[in-house]
Image 1 (cartoon, rainbow, N blue to C red):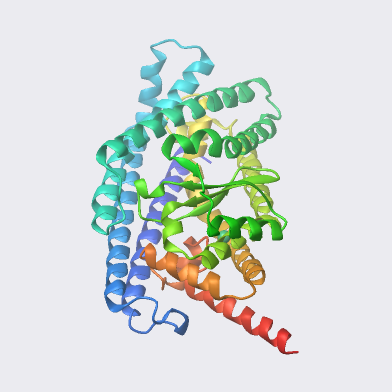
Image 2: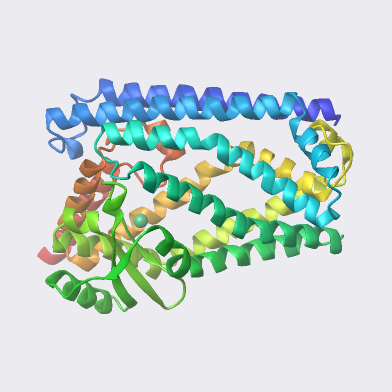
Length: 425
Ligand code: ZN
């Protein structure tokens, strides 16, 4: 294939994806608006009229913003591609005469920095205009600037050595670098999952052990009755930035920290909180974390193999304006290509994830002896974040990593019927 053909196919895929996503987002928004008065029976009565209106307004604002953001990013990418800016930056940097590996690392970090800087106005608008308007934002401008700087510095500290070592592997192990590179990145991901709760998350939030309370007692009782080891229950001050609520298990291996956002503690009662945690334990017990890791690692291997396969072909480099087959150009080209590739892969990933969510819901209902607490918790969470509770089926099929609320409630109430029929017999 000629360089021109590769370039044309890439641009065609980028634009097709943009058109498809824009049309789908508009269809999704209109679907929610047009069906607000005739919701499926699982969703009736969740929102009062006023809340429904607010939720639709929020969906409207977020949809417009995401369409604008993706056009904004696409336009900058097209400018870079058509004006050969990727090559110009490379030539400019070459004048400094760094050694090959350093040159490649600094070049890629520069590209990351440029695109991160371009994203800053979007982040500002999202936090201080949209989230602010709907009462979610609790962050001050000073806090926001600190967060942006910390993330940028952190991403340099982490990405720099990773790129350097990756380029070293590519340079030193010609026939099978793709295999070593994939193993290396997989290890980096596992390492980051380990250090995230201990070193990274505390840079952004304050974690304090949950004080002795009925909630803590009940959590520890439930967790141990499910045969799950917890190394502590922590409260995190999520309310410092946002009203959105969350809970997660942090760390890898046998014992994990349970982390609850203060916003979640305020939102849910004890039984609902236990159901949410039982759902998370379900993910662990049913091996979902391992399976997801396996799936994403296989993708990593496939991706690096593809890159290895095409990396000897000069037409690929020419297509993106590069004149020779440098390893750092290959990394850049493939990170650009990964956008359109993920467009085709991510619906499958989401399909798998939704299956796991149904299974974890089922696990939580069995643990709680019924579907009521989890159903109540999911409804409270949706209301709290003004979620679009009635997405278009095609939209949720492609984009939702969790099943739509109505599907989850329906699946749980079917389960309840089965549980009841057993207890009658
Ligand atoms: Zn889940």
